Structure formats: structure tokens, C-alpha cells
Length: 501
Ligand SMILES: Cc1cc2nc3c(=O)[nH]c(=O)nc-3n(C[C@H](O)[C@H](O)[C@H](O)COP(=O)(O)OP(=O)(O)OC[C@H]3O[C@@H](n4cnc5c(N)ncnc54)[C@H](O)[C@@H]3O)c2cc1C
Ligand code: SF4
Image (tube, rainbow, N blue to C red):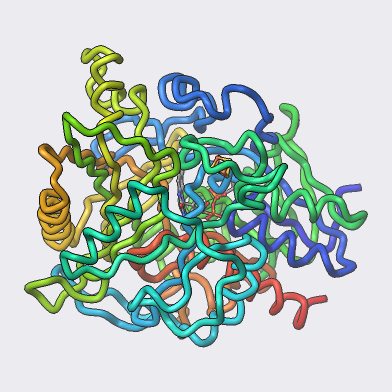
């Protein structure tokens, strides 16, 4: 009953995707997920439930480098954070796989190049139904046509795109994972997508696209509300022989010759650290001392262009990207990052920043605003790291770097928005507590002294332990991470099928 061929821990972009890939084999697979299925309910699309009452957020608190507790921006449930993502599904640029000099230092090379991951990007885009425009984005690496047509711009966004072109910019369609757009049971292009759960199950996310199809097969078992608390190694210390779990308040062990951890970059590192034993006194797979180290999360600023006399009638606004400064800025040869249009801000969301301003004032304001996200790469630093304190709490030490590049991009975006005619440009950032794009805590590489995982995401130290989630990233790049996590999970899935099954 407690013995399987493979145990997968976590069901997000990494875990859900590899579960789907491996479910096609005859291996008996147990998936362990600490959260539950998110119900389809009215609150899915209710900004108050989502933003004021944090209905779906992880209940635990983490601690920052000054010992202050904070609520991490993360979710535990089937599908992990993909249930809440904006479904902007980008490939990394070819240059992101190479060493790139930034204003604040070097973004290191990956142990694989773009061409190695490209076939898995193709598969991941089909699995997650990605829609995009062909040949428009000049930074995009070579690729076949997108599986689906891009989401058309709403009329006001189309007008903005025209005016961006007149500024000499090269706006391109955002690649989006949306299911059956415009069809009877499909996506209705609503204004509660990013940070919300899709009530219609029409968002491409891991629960819908991967976990449900996987568990419909007889060889796959899913245990929800089940937390992996430790990995137990054999006496040699070279293999994991059991996963300790907590289920319904009971501690138990499950066994498999192959274990795939995919708890998200912070929790996977924490699990390995919590699994320290005599053979691995500083945490499992930690001979390099790099478990939890090099945490990255992107530098992200939300910007809103506001015009008091113009109501914004766009419902689905998230269709445009500006990548002109991705590889180099306007007056510098350093990369600055990416600008994306964002989902509509709701009054309640804005009110979480300054709660004493009345909701009606926020509603009036956001109804006249157009929302953008400005995102830059942060660089791996040894001092930015995940640790576990004596009470077992997650400690996140993070000081953003490459900040100058991000500020330049914000300044550049302000200029662009002013030229578009906005009277006021408001900026906001969740700062150090924005854990949505967490990555890099178990970086992959060829040198066991300088990385935790090998290029197939197997730990260098423990032969039957793989990690497939955002933790393998050696650099954070400046596009959304989800598709790369999924593509690498598919690549690792193929490798496991070839070598272990
Ligand atoms: C609001 C929001 C918007 C986003 N928008 C985008 C976007 O548009 N595009 C994009 O590419 N990315 C986006 N992201 C980021 C993206 O969701 C993550 O990069 C991605 O989901 C990470 O995948 P993962 O497998 O590393 O971890 P997760 O998706 O976080 O999955 C980890 C899973 O492990 C489970 N788990 C954790 N610990 C344990 C344990 N000990 N035992 C058992 N289970 C455990 C969790 O419950 C969860 O299901 C967004 C994120 C958020 C929060
Ligand atoms: S209907 Fe479409 S736009 Fe709305 S939440 Fe679902 S996937 Fe997102």
C-alpha cells in the first residue's frame, strides 16, 4: 500500500507536468500534495475574497532576514501556483542560456542551451495550449508556429499598440495559455485571471492540463492534504529510501526507488534542509553548500497609466509585451528587462496598498487606469538564500540586486506611458516579499561543487532523487518562469523514462 515506483511531491508547474509525462508509462506513481483541490466557487472571481481575505493564500508565515514574519505570496493546492498564474507562458530567450553581463554583475550560463530545451518548449506549449504571434517579437528564439492564434487585442489595446509602434517600439502579442477561447465551455477573456482561479477551468494550468488527466489513469494515485516532511536516506546516504509524510494528522512513510521533489523553489530547498541526517549533516544533497542558496525572484514593478477623463473599457487587457529593452537598454548595452500589459487592477487590490483610502475612490481611479508590469532579472547571490530556523520556519534572506537596471526600465516605461498621454503614472512593488517568481535555490550544473542538481535535475549526491520545479534555474532571466519549468520537467520525464523505467 505504501510502496510505489515513483513518488512525486508537489503538483505545480514542475510536479504536475512531470506527473502527466510519467503517467503515460506503466510505473505506479504516487503524487503527494500538501494542499487540496481548489473548489470551483463564486469566490474564485471575487476580488474581495482573493485580495482582502486572501482566501487561497498559503496560511503559513515565513521570516525575513530581520526576523520579521510575512505572508508569502504563494499558494498550496493541486496545481500549485499555476492555478493563480496569469498564464503568460514565455520561452527564455536564446541569450538567457548564455552568460550575460548586467549592470550589477554577470547572469551565469545554463548547463544546457536553448536548442536542447527547444523540443520540450514545443511540447510544453502544446500541453498548455499557448497562443502567440509568429515572427513579431524580435527577441524570440527560433521556433515553430505557436499551437494557437494569439488572443486579439481589445480595441483600446489595439490603439495603444499602434501608438507604441509610432514611438518606434516593437510591441508583440503576449504568449498566453488559455483554453478554448470563445468556445462554449472555454475562456471568456474576463478581468479576473491573473492572481485568481479560473472558475470555468479554462486557464491552462497544471491541475487542469496535467494532474487531472494523470490521475484518471489507473497507475497514478494522488494524495491531497499530505505534506512531505522529510526524505529518509538509506544507511549509505546515497539513496532516498522513504518519504516521511503527514496525512490527516498522522505521520507515515511511503517508499519508492525514485523520488521527484517539486515543492516550489523555497519549499524544495526547505525540505532538503529539514532532511539533514548523519550522512548529510547540512541537509540532503548539500555537499556543495548550495542548497537554498542563490534564491532569485525577479524585480517587478506594477505601473498604472491614469487619465482622469478617459474610462478604460478594456476587460481583458493582458495581451501586449514590449521587449525592446530585453537584451539592451536605450542608452546602455546592458539588458533592462520586459514590459507587459497586465490584467485589470480592481479597487480592492489597490486598497490593500493604502487601506484608509475609501474603496469608491480606488474604483474611480482604477476604472481610468491601464495596467503594466515591468520586470527585470535579478542575479544569483550567495547571500540571498532560504534557511530553516530552529522552530522549523522558513527564513528568506533576500536583498534585491540589479536594481539600477530595473529603475532605468521603470523610468523608460514612464516615458513611454507619458507619450501615450497618461496624466499620472503610479508605481507599486511588493518588494522583497514577492515570492511569485521564486527560483534558483537548487541550481543545476555540471560541476557538483558549484551546483546541487545535474543537467537532468538529478541531485549530484543522491542517485534516486530528482527536483523539477523552479529551483533548478541558474539565472532568473526576465520572462515569466512557468513554461521553462514545464519544459524542463518534460525533458526530465523523458530522461527518467529512458534510464529508470
Ligand atoms: C499570482 C501569480 C501569477 C503568476 N503569473 C505567472 C505567469 O503569468 N506566467 C508564469 O510563467 N509564471 C507565473 N507565476 C509563477 C508561476 O506560477 C510559478 O513560477 C510556478 O507555478 C512554479 O512552479 P513550481 O513547480 O516551481 O512550484 P509551484 O507551482 O508553487 O508548486 C509547488 C507545489 O508543491 C506543493 N508543496 C509544497 N511543499 C510541499 C510539501 N512539503 N509536501 C507536499 N506538497 C508540497 C505546493 O502545494 C504546490 O502544489 C505566477 C505566480 C503567481 C503566484
Ligand atoms: S475565463 Fe479566461 S480570462 Fe477568465 S479566468 Fe478563466 S482563463 Fe482567465
